Image (tube, rainbow, N blue to C red; front, side):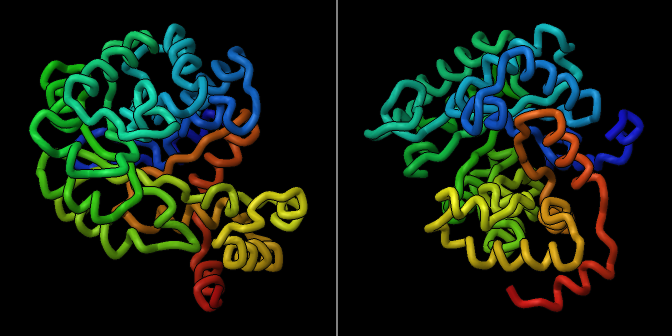
Length: 313
C-alpha cells in the first residue's frame, strides 16, 4: 500500500466528538507484546508508517502490555496534532490502575483523575482526544456522584481529555451511559461482525440517535476472521473451545471457495453500516498493517455480497 492510497482510506466523523477518524483505528495491543514481542524501534517505525498511510488514530490502554510507553516514544518524533489518541481508565480489578487481577475496582473520581494525569505523564503528551471508562464489572458505581464518570468530566473541563466515553461489552451498560447525556463516544466489542450482530439491534441505534461515536472492537472476532488457516491453528490448540469457531470456519471455507479475502469481507461488512465509525484492529508489523488498511480501503462488489448473503452460516 503506497502513500498515494491515503486518500482511499475512508474516514468517518466519530459522532459528536467531531473527530474525523480512519475507519480502522490502530489498536495498540498489537505492538504491546501481547501477541508476540515487538522491539521499541520496530514499534516506532510501525506507528510512523501507519501515520504516513493515514491510519493516525491510536487506541491504547494500560492493560495493552507495553504499548503506551512505545506510543510515547513515537510521539517524541511526531507532532501531537498529527495523531488522534484515545485511551482507557481500566476497571478490571482492585489491582493498581484497575489492571487485570481480582477484587473490586476503585470507582472514585479521584482515582480516575489521577489515572489520566499519570497516563499523560507516562506518554509525554498534554491531552487525550478521548478517554474511556474501560470494562467496569458494575456500571452504577461509575455513574454515581463522585464516581468514574464525574472524574472524566473533570478531566474534560481541565482540557486533559477532549471527549469522554465507555468501552465495554454489556449492552444494558451502554444504554445507561447513553442516557446520561454526558457520553461522547463508546466502544462495543465482539458483538458486531460477520458472526455476531447483536449490537445492531441495541447499541448502534441508541448511539446513532444520540449522535454518539461508535468504535467497534473485534470486527475480526478474536482473530477467527483474519484469513489465517483455521484448521492449522486449531491443531495447535487455538480456538478449540471457542463458541464462534464453527460459523467462522464455514465463512473461512466459503471465502476460499470464492477467492475472497476473509479480512476484507470482515472489515467491509462492518463498514457497510454507517453507524459504525471505526473498527479497531491491531498490527504486529508493517506487512500486517498494510494488509489491514488495504482490506479497509477496498470495497467488495455487489456480486460478492449477493453470493455471501445467499448462504446460511
